[in-house]
Every structure is written in C-alpha cells, then in structure tokens.
Length: 160
Image 1 (cartoon, helix red, strand yellow):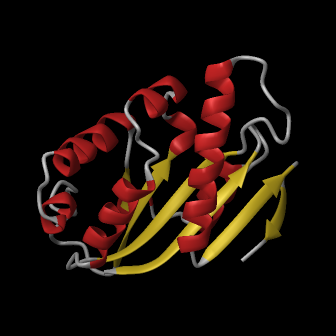
Image 2: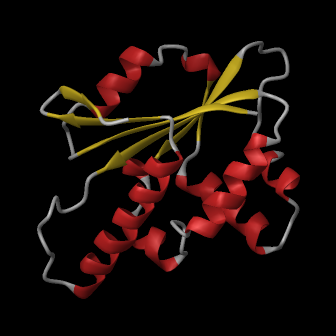
C-alpha cells in the first residue's frame, strides 16, 4: 500500500541527495530502483503480467516492520536508455504505481529527479526529445505525488 509519494527535484549538484539523506535516514528500509531493476519491471509490464506480479519483483525484507521506501533515483539512470526503452511512459508508471498500491507493505515512493535544461532548448534533436519526455514525466510524477520539493543551491522550495 502506497502511503505517500515524494518528489525531490532540481538541477545537478543542488543538494537533492543531501536532502534525502537528511530526511530519510533509515537506509535499511530503502530499496533503490536502479536502471537494471527498472528495465526488469518494464519487461514484466510488457509481457502483460498482472499488476500484482509487478510488485512481486521487489525484495521487501520479511522481518521488517513499518514502511519501506522505494527510491527511484532517476539521476543515476542513463538518459539514452530512458528514451530507447520508453521507460518514462506514463502508462507503464500508472501500472507500476497501481501495482504497488495493492502491495501488502506500507510504502513511501521517493523520486529523485534532475531538472534537465532548465528552459534552455538543446541544439541536438535527441537531447530536445529527452527534455520533452523527461519534463512530461516530471509533470506526471508531480501530479501523482503528495509532496513535491525543489532544491536550488541547497535551498528547499516546497511546491506541494
């Protein structure tokens, strides 16, 4: 069951990871969704597995009580792979979040996201496409989130 969803975003090296470390210190409760795990989840999704099967891929500690944190650190995902594999497709994310909503564990979904280009239009076509897709995904995640926090120069802006 998803208790809440939190987005922390901002430019590179602005203090996002420091904020997360300070506010979510229970490292033993954090499951990081790296690029490989994200692709494995997407493979299950594309093979038309049921939503419950998508949440089964996470290795939640059985003995742990309380909530677990699923940490989606998109700052560590390769940009070219996100586009090539359509990993930012809202339909995929809707299915994943719905699946996690039915999980037996209490979950916090924590997203760490870079702001890309910050209004600058890249010269390369692929970079422009990434900026558009990534920006749309950031809007989708923010709309679904309970909290949206922007970090600029280490300063915290609570947007939602």
